[in-house]
Length: 164
Image 1 (cartoon, rainbow, N blue to C red):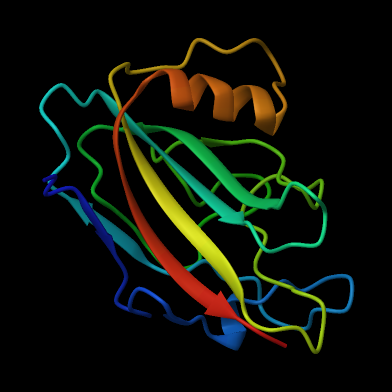
Image 2: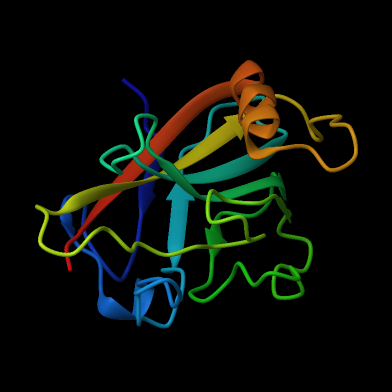
């Protein structure tokens, strides 16, 4: 049993996300603010972290990737609310982002179609056994996720729900 856990002071696992987290584009009118996240209990040998945000319920046939962040230093155990701007300037040494499925760099909040049951937004922190992924220039999020998967020692997840 792993002691690797991911939590947020803004919501508990399986609880609703807040409107402030909603995407502010297409027909979404939120503030596109990422929630604060914190993790603990990463396995020995962790050399960096990555974070992904995925909606498996999106009506695309393959879900929807809302945030892909990697190269987070192994000493980092939390991300403040509101990180994930498109230019990454708010991250400091907290990692590198690639384009999400909106086509934007950074955090892209929930924006499920109106009137559907709540979608699941799965935040996953990946403890990686390498300090850097060694990626080519301008990789797609699928390539980054492949390299994350190949180097993951353990994961911890936190799921928020969102409905419009």
